Amino acid sequence: MHIFKTTVGLAGGALAAIAMSVQMVAADEIGRVRAVSDRTTFEECSACHMAYPPALLPAASWERIMATLSDHFGEDASLDPKTTKHIRDYLVANAGRVPRGVDPASPPLRIDEMPWFRHEHGSRTFARAKSDPNIGSIANCAACHRGVDRGYFDD
Amino acid sequence: MTRSTLILVGALAALASAAVAADRRAIISAYGDPAGFSAARGKAFFEARHTGGKPETPSCTTCHTANPRAEGRTRAGKPIAPMAVSANPERFTDPAKVEKWFRRNCNSVLGRECTAKEKGDVLTYLSSL
Image (cartoon, rainbow over all chains, first blue to last red; front, side):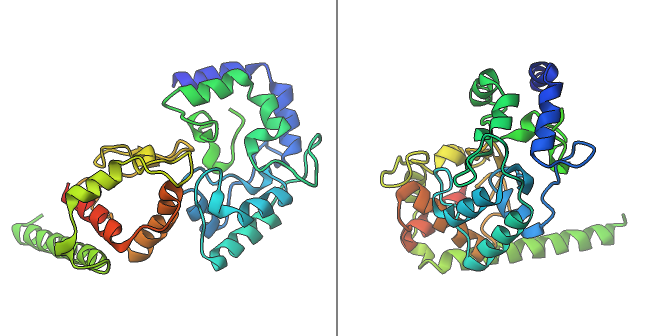
């Protein structure tokens, strides 16, 4: 609970930033980012981490991620070719736009390297995510954003 | 519930559990003669710091912890169900799943495939707890 409150506190003054990020990651009109709706994608990706909504990265990022699964941020996350293609096609078809300030030719592969993400999660949040055993990683969205499985990040 | 219903439910549960144990034995046997596998060797392998793999994951225990009866945690912060069969009876009942994760994790931790003997030892260890 205290984690949640702290996060709300950190983000509390950043309503404008949230509005900006919602616009940038192509959320729908109520501020919801569409959660993963493909079953195979959900099952495979969420084996290790949250199944990140495809709109959080542009197509070029997903293409590169799916082409380099055998070294996926320091782990072998490879899949058979058929499953890889299925997931790649889903992610690319539902990818987000290239956000402002990002090189369209080589967008980041990590969501936490996107300018809008850095804008909303300051260095203190990054440090806290790493040091707090209840969070463990900045990639663990659900530790603080409780509605995340349904695509709600605005808490 | 009547007594006969209870007995029936108990018998069905015992049958299901026996079937699962048979599946697990078949998976271990596919790697070699179970008599040749060693839980002690599996434990040492599971707990060792290996070289040759990715620097982020030097050991099985990086994510699974040294206590396989407890939950582990992925590097992204997500819980991993216990590896010990005693704590998680669903473990090692789906051969495709077992092979998928040995393929990925042996490459991450050791930078190579695990041998059939290493796999048999680890499964024997985790089934023995």
